[in-house]
Length: 452
Image 1 (cartoon, helix red, strand yellow):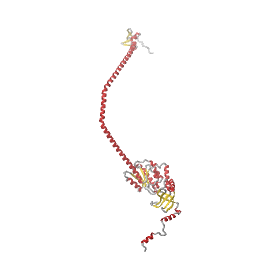
Image 2 (cartoon, helix red, strand yellow):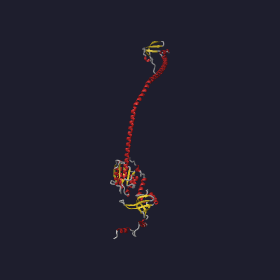
Image 3 (cartoon, one colour):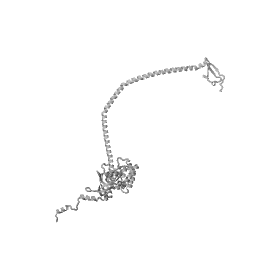
Image 4 (cartoon, helix red, strand yellow):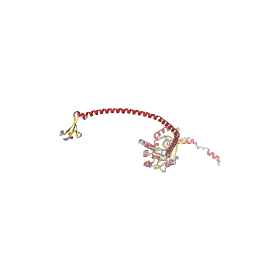
């Protein structure tokens, strides 16, 4: 029976049939000359994309249900080829070639003796990545842009603090749970008043369900500050429902600010473009609301501190002014008394002078008035004297004596002057006055003048 040493020696000695690892890898490399593994179009998902001189990445195939990786292989794109392919890819898709993209690539199997199996990417079909879903999404965005409503919800006034929140989500969803936990356990103590409007957030009923929830919110829009549409991450195909024109238009034209937090950071839907505020995840939506509330609280605290500081300053200045007045009032009162005493002494001194001057002025005025009165009286007397003289001349001229000197007589009967024949009766005794005497006569007949 061979001993242990002999056995170990025989086992560890190379046989004629063994080869080196390098030779084994070379044999595998020669097998890959088959046309079936050259210039093949392969559909896969990119991961760990990095670019130095060349582009290095991994191509994955994941289970559509579980998301588990079913196949994986290293890949690279040579530097010059990558520059060309990435430019064409970005021109079509609007994005740089990167991780977490579903792509159709033309690959050739490559086995390096030192680095092992990989594939070289020769070409990329950017239209596949863009796909029907992306093209539809871009068409929706272009249509909303042409209608002028893509940015409309961003113009809706946003309150400084959004506490009354209408939430559109699925009640049992993890995203909704994360959102509520973040909202209610915030460290700032900001109070929120959330109200869930139940909606289906995946599947064929997503669009109609979310639009129905939006309709309910709008009916009571005066009760809310904003609308939050949230959903956790998932497969890309599960988010296709949010790339819908009618739903996007409803969000774009909604009268309240709309916050959208759908999926993960890498997930972008049409709702992200039309929402007034777009955040990465449901948790980020809660953080956004909390931050606005915290900023408002900080601003209120700052205002409160400012008010307290201002009041203290006013009180301090008021005390200083009061102290100043308390110290200066006696001095000011003394100055006022002294000033008024001087003014009073001045008045006492000057009043006799002013009175004497006033008396002199009044005396002078009185003398002028007396002279004027004398002149006026003299003028009036002269005028009246002349008028009396004229009246005297007139009276003299019209006196009965002057009249009788011209041959007229005066007749009296019973002591009365007779001015007409009707005053006389037959046998009346009359007295006739002449210039140089009078005569008595008796009336025999009366002859009145005949009326014409």
